[in-house]
Image (cartoon, rainbow, N blue to C red; front, side, top):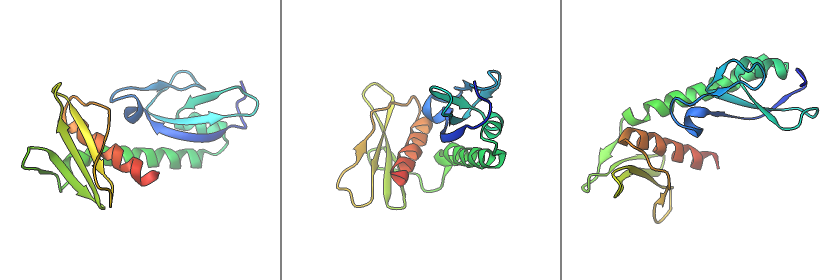
Length: 155
């Protein structure tokens, strides 16, 4: 496996993708538990490696860029973790927690199975778009609202 000449083609937070408390093992050093994953690719290697910040920086010979990506992921994770406590959450007449941010109407609803779902109405949309994912707690669903909001902002 080559140790140099890699490029980062993406990154993600395992807590968002796989769930709270889920980690990857770094594909390069095979020892570090990684929450903030850098997806690395090399012309001389078939497939991708999922790596931590330090290994990704060495592989691409650009530790500064790896640290910048890692810092951005950590900042976003902090915003996501604090989103349920953000000012502006209200409760509708029907008991639905909701928040309005930048023209988005984000809401949490209790489903028939006792778990919670998330709906998001983008600016100018006539009706909410409902996610299929279910959450065990209102707080987890509020973090799901953050994820939906960020998805709309980035697409």
